[in-house]
Length: 177
Image 1 (spheres, rainbow, N blue to C red):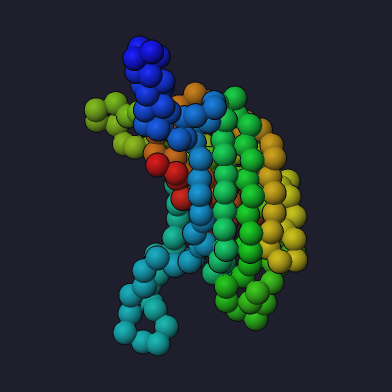
Image 2 (cartoon, rainbow, N blue to C red):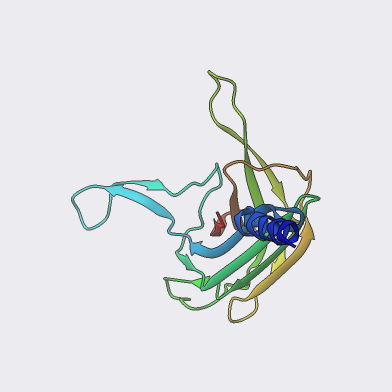
């Protein structure tokens, strides 16, 4: 009886301490999202900045306007299957604030390539179909697809939700750790 209890306790402890993102064939999971602010910094003393640094992420350009997102959940499996559920991806500024700009979106997962000791940091990107899925009027969307070139590991994951028309990024997922 004591052996059975010990085995059960160890099994429960292993389940509690298992990495959630690796459970059930998951490569990585994302909970929550961050909308894009197109400019990361600006310089100048006038009302308008004379020099700005655009908010590029892993080499992907931002759009010309702020976008906000209410919620984002994503799960990527080892075999490349990806499910993304986004809520409230809408313009956060400009004359069409609160609208979806009739945009369609797709997802790109960036994984770090382990660098050689003297090599710069590099990333491999894997995307869903670039035609994307249309945003609902309230900015909701669902992506159920397979990433091109699946992988079994993904160090330093970044998930970007991108504009199908110009490939700019609208939102990023927050990795579940």
